[in-house]
Length: 410
View (cartoon, rainbow, N blue to C red):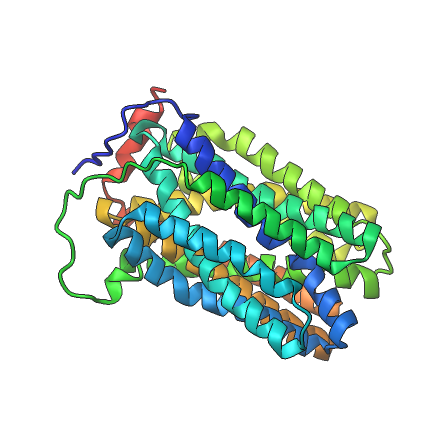
């Protein structure tokens, strides 16, 4: 069974692919610009306790998880561009709620609702990138697409920390985020998508398989471990540095080094992705990240603090495209949206667990012990990949793995 994408442009960097990358970066940039500073915002503005902060910030992950399976079904069943534009618009317009003065409850409601369109957007846009790429460049293209998302997750917090340090005005941060999301909406409206023709019959009855890729469930479960660790790190890094390490700066530099690690990992691992060595790529990533998380808490000095950022960036830059290619590799052509929603929902579930668990642990045993727990969780995820997920993936590979032979000729 062959994928029959109707795109005739065999270039990797075609116009629509660049638009998808831009839309992804600006929309993700808007969302992650405020992420590391929201604990400080809630603490300073509403005097919220640590466990309350964890509860308040984990709500968006819950709605993102709930929305992604539905979004996966929608992009496999409805006009994909229409679904994409609806998600981008809602992601943009909800930033207005951040600018409206209100209570802690009002903020929790807005942030929680915001998770739904952002979660659905990530599914729709991840599926769009599959549609605008030629088959022979898919693995490579997915890798660079993931890089645009990872860079946004690293650079946006760095910019947010800089703006806050300079102006101490959260409304300016929220306004910048809203403008960035608006740019994503404008660029996204000009994308020309080429969905593949379905080569297997569509499901007639709604079932669990419409919303979760059952054939890739363990791959998604494995991703939960890594999302949990990144959720705790990205949300509590700034407040950990301020309250425990006594750092008045450095958070922005941490995210900058994280971004550098992400970029270097994609440049170094591009050949491995083209050759289809996804398990090897993922294993290298989880090893690097595990070392990074351990170094972060074991060596709180400058070498450990900044060195861990680079290692975690290198690790995440390896494991993300590998896991995304793996789950697409066990999906049929008409399940790409479902596969994408499954891996992203798994990441969001992990982030939500990390945020909530991090807040609870920080309240009862302190931030240092919380980050030791994070390092242990990451090691467990690495062990699961090596001992179980690797064999699980090889037993369930479908036709997409034939891309390996095509990619190596490019």
